[in-house]
Image 1: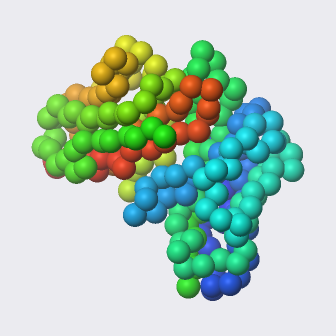
Image 2: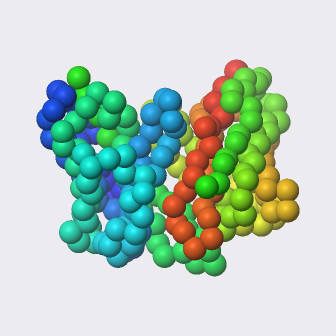
Length: 116
Length: 109
């Protein structure tokens, strides 16, 4: 398996522009997570899906952020309009349904977003 | 909300030394994860445990549920072990992870 695939790997944009990050989870995984990593706050969960349904979006910072999972093999995280404080590395991860309360998450390589 | 603390924040050691990284959390959990992030940025899951001890090669992870504490040990450390090690916990009935701030480990040849 190719693992979790994210695109683009790097994105540089200007403030006010729309940004779309993409993720393809590992085939057969039914959980998908979006994380953000910054120097100041470390890793934070933004939202996660189970069987394409958003379960917890309490980490989404504000209405400028939205995430969708139209099918089991694709998810997007959109920021509109983008702001310089959104600059971070965004990770996507996927996992199987937990067994005995345990579920290993597999992380994608991340998208480094810079908003000028 | 669970509070996750790691210590030390930074650790530099000589090749061959025994390494210990600690993680404590404030509220009971369903599982604790140890992750490794290399300088290139990729994140890899090392261990996931809810009790006792797990071993993989030179890495050992332990957890004490009563004390809400976990340790990650590296035996015979090597420069390729240099990375940031992150502890994360998941609460009962919830798959979301809460992360510690990470421990930056540098092993000097």
